[in-house]
Amino acid sequence: MKTKLSLLGIPLVACAFLTLPACEDSDGPAEEVGEAIDDATDSRAAEGVKDAVEDTADAVEDAAN
Image 1 (cartoon, rainbow, N blue to C red):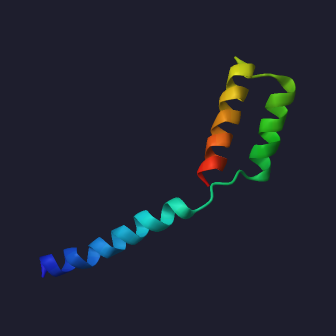
Image 2: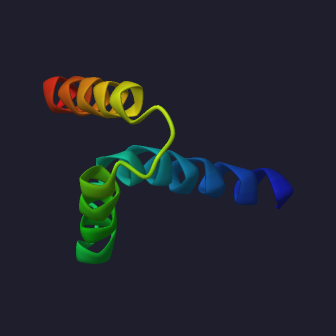
């Protein structure tokens, strides 16, 4: 009985691992406005470095998709 239950759980876990990464991680409007305010006011420490890292991360993400 325990083995049968384990064998039923394996496909369920596999489906979860295959479908969850396919979900798009999009920023909501409030987060976009907050980032725009931070960028406009330069209120973050090392703003230039963080912007460069964010741009590079966005480029890598776009290339991967």
